[in-house]
Length: 83
Image (tube, rainbow, N blue to C red; front, side):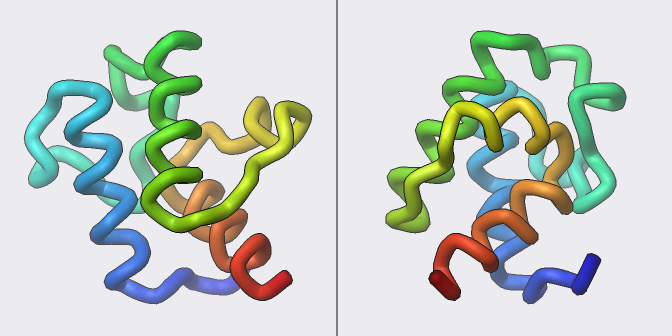
């Protein structure tokens, strides 16, 4: 996986912090559904919707289930924006 730009990761961390109700300082690109207690199925869907709105992308439902970390989401956004 290629590293996503820091500004993209920072924006995703802000979104995730808002959705999960945790301080952004507690999150990193390694944060995932395994490391964030509040990351459940409902908050995951809320995060996917927030990512779609913030970055102007469309994430297919089949892809959403694989996006279980900040790093994976960042790489998906990069690919979706690149076309």
